[in-house]
Image (tube, rainbow, N blue to C red; front, side):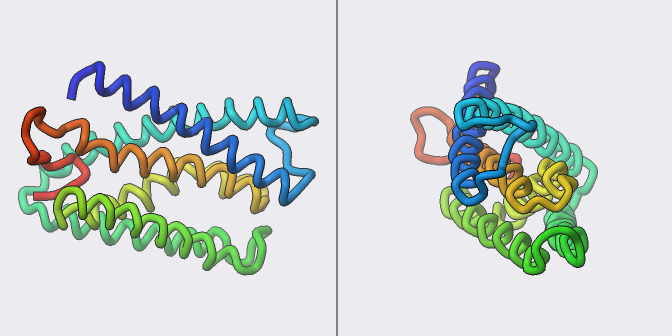
Length: 207
């Protein structure tokens, strides 16, 4: 990893965030004509605001990704037995899903949100973890699930505090999830040793 590769990852991530937010926002506007970003009125201004919000989502997701890599490095340095750190990540991922149920149950969200949100997040995270494990090692399963579930949820907290608007939560979580999926799946390609077919283990994987 060098500065050029890191900046390339950052730039691509924020662009993906902008594109994902724009697509998600258009779908939200089609489903709910009253859906607006920052009180914006009119399609053109709304689209601009959505794209700008997506760029900020991408930047925020990249900050979260960097924070996770640092946490992973520190934890693996302190915890001498790698399986303990992996088990802790698995526990936290399950705990976060339970917290989502708690946040959305008996709230202003639609009645089925308390199981739909964690279910969709789990299914999407499993798909990303499966791809990550397929391209790297089986040890990447739980760390990837932890990153996709726990970190995405933390980064998407404003959506859970948006007053119970289903569209607002979707608009927040989807771009962040897409950005995180791109970053975790892209990392091992960036760290691949040139001229060889062997990929080095990623910071999101385990020994």
